[in-house]
Image (cartoon, rainbow, N blue to C red; front, top):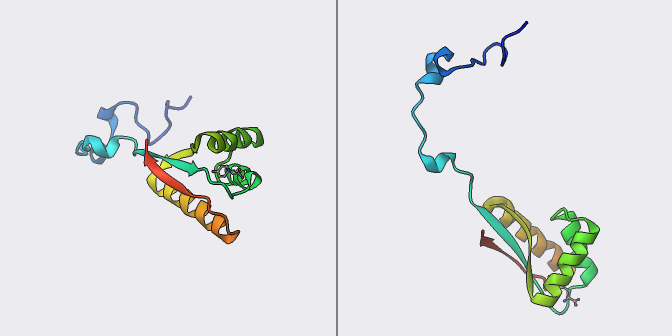
Length: 115
Ligand code: TYC
């Protein structure tokens, strides 16, 4: 029978080697989950619906049904949340939306908003 947790993974802090026991407590902000940011897609009159649906499927990993519903919601209301990510990922998604739209001459715009 082997130890629970296996070798090198002590069960109680008192079993831990000095380097693991005596670490300084980290400040709260270092342990909290990083803030999340919404990627917003904006409606316009020129970007084709199929192109927006395709982006929502490929870049934002929506199912075909979800992508279609979200595109229509953006079309009707003016904007919608394509996804929620940590800041660096959100900014990368926005850049990818703009690049792919610009490559085809579409005016589609996206932005980042703190959750
Ligand atoms: N309004 C566009 C059209 O009628 C479709 C569209 C939907 C464009 C969502 C942008 O974010 C958007 N072709």
